[in-house]
Length: 377
Image (cartoon, rainbow, N blue to C red; front, side, top):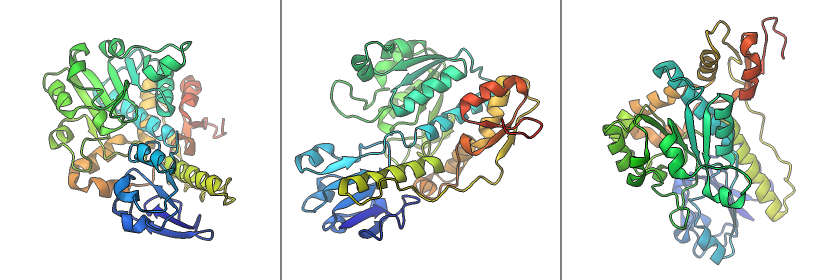
């Protein structure tokens, strides 16, 4: 069998080479000629899997090493008996880390008090669940919004979209991009929601660029309805709006889910899924172990408050401002910055030294503790 694999998927080279004819191609450059005689694809979001790519090929299965799958024409796949599978939840902890760093940045740079802030989490799937938990651990008033789950799970409590937005201090989006249907998410934040918002709200979008109508966002930022915008995803990537790039509180090149841990997870899930589908015997395969960070002990002793300790720890582990600075310095290198993203490990790779008063709460954020006697706790 022949498998075409996006060459930028990390930790995958060599996994399948002894079992198939494997061809590695830059995901954004995969063509119909590349896949014509392929049996399966392993891709990321930069490969549009539709009739243009697949018609006339023998591809019978597509695996994407990503949580999102709007780059796969699922209707075409269904009509042509092409199996497809994403990697649900593979980057949930990474996006959580990104949002944690955003909250830490807001506390340190803006003086935002996190405890008691009203947080609307729009979309409560694998990622949104983690953001709900994060908000609760920080003492926020969390308002989950998910009409699909609300209909399916009547015993769980979800806020209505308008109700949550009208109360929120911070709104964060974690939905897939859907273009039609009762619960379409295209321009979910658009002109229709602006009258609902409190003055001075913060908007965070790590889902898909077109979940937010950027013209409506610009209008809301100009009149102060949205005081701060944090944008990791953009309409028209990699050609992004220069005004929003300059005026957002934080602007990053679609890397919220780009921790090394999340990439490792996505690769593992894709290889295992392909193995199960074709019976290749790699159902328990794992990539090589991830490298450790150069410095894996973070010391936040002596902070005046829990939120100071939290912010110091999160920004020492992953500083979202550094990603923002790189994009603003070279906005024309959006794809390069994604493709050459530096190693970023999640909290579980670190030890934390912290005052005993805050130690228990810090465990909620995935950190391992080293007390002052250097004994792991």
